[in-house]
Image (cartoon, rainbow, N blue to C red; front, side):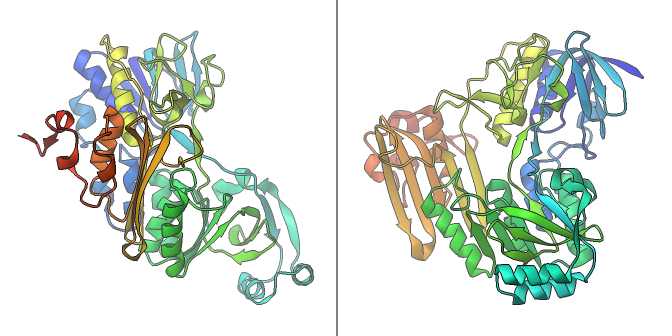
Length: 478
């Protein structure tokens, strides 16, 4: 089967939808086809944590009204994954073999979960309850492990690692899409899960923990680094979250990973850590990270480098193909380097720029910076920009801190050449927008540095020339 369209968009999330809107502003009649590998017409991915936690119903997740596609004359194709792109023929092929010929293509395919190569062992005998009791009661010694193995026969399954086995393995999930969140939610309810394990202590892992802890499910977090959230938060912020998680009765294993997963009747029963410690497990969420989803471009001849390389117009190395969102590498304005900055607001900006340029407009994307947030057991934490820098690691860096452990409040601001390049706010995050604006606009703060981490720091302390341009609410100039 063959189709033809003026504009083909791969991906139905932030970047893809922003691009479709931008195209329609410039071109009222051109055909727009959106292909999505997912089954939902659209939703806000940052909100799936709150859906899993039961705070939001599924109808509250949608980022566009159901009429968005018909009102903008957009053809939406769900469950229609693009698996191949030909730049010479200007065609894209779906998983079902449908060939779509395009004039302009936007790749807004997002990211895909990283699945580590963990060995799976299938338990041939002994019921999982007795095995779990043995794991709990036995000391972690070679003799105990030998005795346990003598009571349980193991064999490596036909699919001998997690990458191959995940689609049919009960009790093991990833957590990056609404479909995955819905499947995880159903599994928890059907199996009355009261404890779970999470492989990965980064943002995805902690977002998962945020939802599970809200459901009163105790968690084990397994993190390869020496602390959780090591990529986005410093040791103080990480320790605040760690202490709160452990006070709830959950556990964190740092400097470790899962070596083997044990399965019985197609369902996870336990896993062993690198240390040899074996932990009972009825639910495991794999959350070690995501990588740019560029599989469909493997034969397209487009420049890739751990992501799709684009220019300021969001154009790839092919004049007819653009890219935006989590699949691309773009400029980090704080380092000047090309990075994969996978956050929702930047995906919207990139998609809007790409859509404008695809349809005859003129727009430019000049870059952005990292912003990440998570809330664990009523402690919200936000990181902005180069939040992990410390004095002595980079020339010209000044660090300002205010830490109140009794109130679980922490503020850290990183300054270079009298300009803020990073910040961490924990416990009290109301002024995150002010700090983000100072970073984005690279405002000289040389006259207000002494106030920068004060609890009452706010608009009134900002430089006058900057303050007069800020808007509070909709129309009130400060």
